[in-house]
Image 1 (cartoon, rainbow, N blue to C red):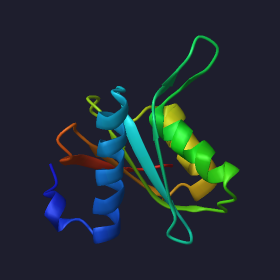
Image 2 (image 1 turned 135 degrees about the vertical axis):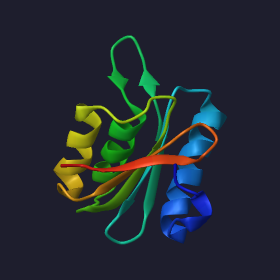
Image 3 (image 1 turned 45 degrees about the horizontal axis):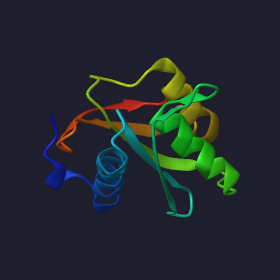
Image 4 (image 1 turned 90 degrees about the horizontal axis):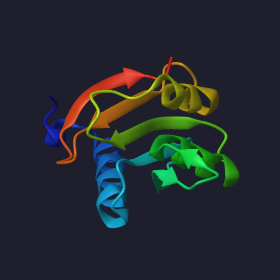
Length: 117
């Protein structure tokens, strides 16, 4: 586990945003990504009959739709211990294999950081 106060302020911000999205929308996961200009994109899980996206996939899609060219970092707040291969692939597609993905529990404590690759 990582003490959130030890995180870079910009990383702490995306964890906080992801946690807020999860709580505000009452969804299983919240996620946030930061693009190459420092803009952030926040999303929750999408679970429609015709469309199912994880929070991280949705946040990446929002970044792409807004013109982001790359990602600096991603964060997901979830009960799960890590992120799926599909989530890592979405981050990798936009940010590259070395893009860090912070995985935090519902309390905002970062459990692990994995690379998108």
